[in-house]
Image (cartoon, rainbow, N blue to C red; front, top):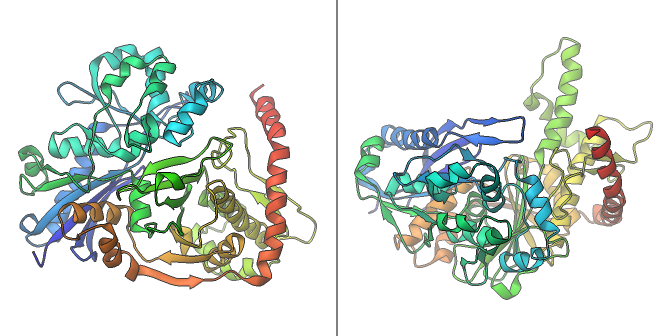
Length: 518
């Protein structure tokens, strides 16, 4: 089909998007609807499951209005979405409760308690993944203890993309990436949900759906979903991997030699490294991070994530906006970013050291420290706003090096995507801190593209993922940013101080949090 089209659905935390691509990987149209979720004083974060499906279907319908003859030209739809969380469904296929998002913190105490349990090390070695409150395992344990009547109604526990796949196909399935890092054995890509027994939620094992490999299997669009979306019943539907992996795939992470990394510089910072085989996986003494199956046979992605990345930049920008507002001057973040690269590059390197732990949830990569808080070290008279903002940029780069070092050797080349990837200053600093080549990826919707690439391989448009990457990703890689030799030395020294300061501050951060609570 020379004019065939692939669609990738990316159901994120803030936006649900459906993006259309040609078989060769060119993006031709997109439709998006903002997501809505509620937060609660007890740390809850919930989303209306029915509305999520209606909105996802609406984005598909919008594409039929933008693309002539889409229903006949459509080759396949692939779906990805936000990770972790708990989307419970009853026997009739209806929501048993609102979805719990990855932002939900109600099971934090359960997660913290399990990290002190004798079984924790064995679980970490099985899954290659640290446990925290965002995961379905601890959320099911909380529900077992506090809302057993909800679990009694449920027959399946999905993640976000699994729910949308179910609504598209009627099939109750999940993918190997999320199932393995939460409940499985990453080396065999099979279930081993012993954590539920340890947490007193063993009965919930009945809720875990069958795993399917999206590059090999596809469902079919139901007549009901076809009527809602304006597409043809029977259209192949593939279940993508979790959104961060699809973003990595569309953003240039694939590399059979394991020399490449991918960093997403978004609200949260994600740092990914390819392990060409299970033998290449490197676990760490903090027992942190994620190990996920990659949509290539035998290949894995190791991931460390910062709770807050560009949120630190936004925070400092908003401080300036607030000062200006009190003087009657309204400015947007975009206004303040203009010329920012030049101003911070004119400031001296590593004059202050910033730990980018601005999230109230602390940090999880590579250290698991809920009490961690952001801080500047080294401020003195004569320093200005540009020095502080440069410190924030450098702090994000130190956090990236911290994360990559926890996964073994730093990659020879790191591809970056996300809003801040457009900053020349950030690319130079990151390359110099990592002492690695850095390239931005000119792919507007990497997550949806990664999902669509899985559909392209499943539909045999390409013989394997390597051939698909050569067509969809390689032509969109930006020019290389090399390390600046005048910066690598100062950054080496500053990074050592960054790590030492963090370790010495951990007991003080805990005391600070306890003092605030009292």
